[in-house]
Length: 336
Image (tube, rainbow, N blue to C red; front, side):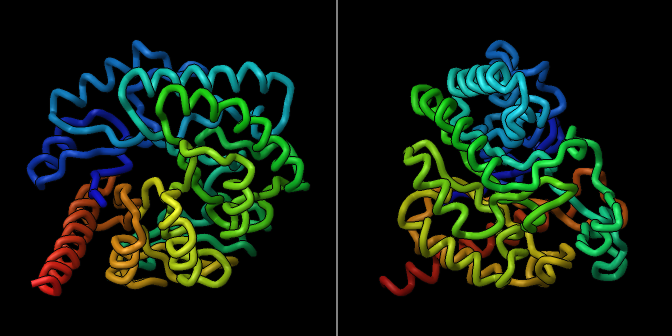
């Protein structure tokens, strides 16, 4: 199990230098703004992006979230989906040729939804993301525009499952050929429907269904611990997923994010304040056969921080690193 600096939005000198100064040489990017994205990721652009990272001596573990415009028609089953799917295949080839081994993705046309993106309800006035299904049903939407589709109704989840299978059957052979693993993020929030569009990946059973459908060593979970704890049943979902998918080597990498509450109403919080015990989660991961990496995910906003959340991400990363080292030393002491 490894620790990476994650959710980075650009090849930022300060962030990458800080990662190395903290003893971390692995990074994960999320929708990087300095990577051209005109319908697909071209190899030449990806290679330049990777070369820029190489100059800081960091290993790019994963690229997360293609722009929704790359494959919204594929998700929704609209005219033009075959062209989009071919562009996704070309983007996967670009990742593989550039030496980036993981693509984190979702299959949620309406994307992430929050009814308050900066709720001042965290510790001592820290701002956090919050969701309330009752408010959402009244039309409250406080998410930034990531190209999410709110203009098409697809109320039948089975239609989305058909689209998912059509999409995956075409992209997985390319991922296998170019040695890229596709890591699927759950629907956040994990509710049955939002804005007239059904949601698919809202519980453990949906991932079991996807695994049986795809049956590839190049597919697995982007294990968003926060989202799993938001599901009905709370933290139990985290440990059930680890127990089932860990030994099967299907947990590709994990987001560490804590949450208070479950659907239909929850809010994010600092690690250790919410639904699960971070020590227990890291311990279970380390003993499950998980050989992927962990990253800090969404973080609360605190006084004097920058948009990316530098201060809290530094603290989260140090927290997670301390847990990993403590567990490793505990195990070594048992063997002594």
